[in-house]
Image (cartoon, rainbow, N blue to C red; front, side, top):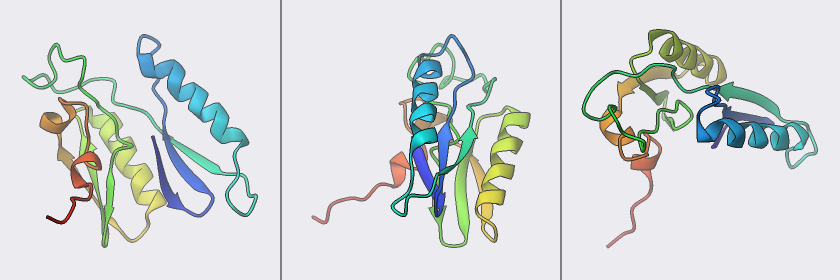
Amino acid sequence: MLSKSCPASVNANLDNDPASYDYAVTRTHLEILKTATDADGKRLQIHTMSPPRTLRSNKFTRNNPDFAPGYINYFPVNGGIIAPHFGDAAADATAKALLEKLYPGRKVVQLNIDAVAAGGGGIHCVTQQQPQL
């Protein structure tokens, strides 16, 4: 997944667990991005965000192959960024620090999204547009 943070800059998920299906997929995506340019022909500045190595142990995370622990699925709002945290203190802090760097002047707030991630989604997934009825 990609998330545009500033001109000629993209954030990409990079899974570092060789046992994960996403390990190879995210590396393939990264190689594609390395040769990509923006609309003005500028090379992209790529920032990677790796999933946490450990998770909180609860009914949402235990024995759940659909659990989607990724920091890339954050949501920019006016004056802030809503981002997930998964209970891995080091990884949570690294993700927050990168978002603070990429979005200066915005407050980064991290939330426990285990119930959402249990179904394979993230913050950005639950903030999508809804059709007018």
